[in-house]
Image (cartoon, rainbow, N blue to C red; front, side, top):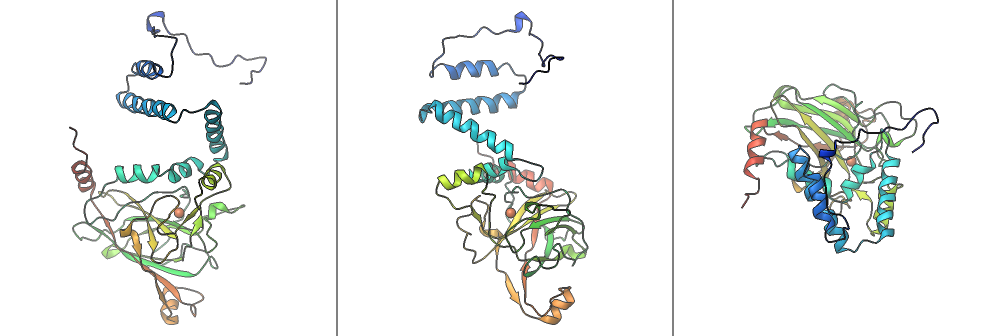
Length: 327
Ligand SMILES: [Fe+2]
């Protein structure tokens, strides 16, 4: 901490003597855990207490189990420091770390159990931004020249089969180089991302480019870790979708494509069978022209997927019914 000569650093008020606990000292690796539990048990936040008790228990057990050395402990702290330092408004290395550890996929599947028949969720990833522009049905989310043409279409419906009109679909994808727009220096506006509202009959459609497999950002500490673990850094090609509609449970998901080399070794464990579809290549210049593709002599890929959203109540009932029974 740097202290300027003319000001004092922040100094919290000393607790009243009666509030200062008297805890055992002379702790060792076997007694420390209980004492930390006792300290944390004074919190009035019940959930925080529960989470911290488990975290401390597992963390201490882990350190005891692997006999964590001081050098390793320091290496871990420096690693986490580096993870924090590389984060920026458009780069979230902590999400990436959570992703490659499988924690994001675990939390996601635990939190978002959906009823039978509803579209499955999958991980958000670190590349969503808040500046995607809203486009009309049929328009393009990608600027010209960003990749092979792809037309995305389908419907948004409830579990009862009723169409959901006016659902907001936010989507984002890589270009043909395998990069999201935020990975380019000098980005001035959103590209290969957009927001679309489903129309009558729950229909949605928009023009895009065919996303390609891409390496997760591997020039930072998480990439170095994967290298040391002997893991590749690639994700299969996918199209991110986030759907919200009044009265329905919000859905964060992504569509994957059959035949992708990385479908069964996704660096961040996001693939689900129900989200894998067959991309059909269509060579029909007049249809391409009608859909608005400029290079309409070229074939385009058709990505068709129907989205099914449970209502908030249906989603909550599914979550409740799938809770593990406490013994
Ligand atoms: Fe992604």
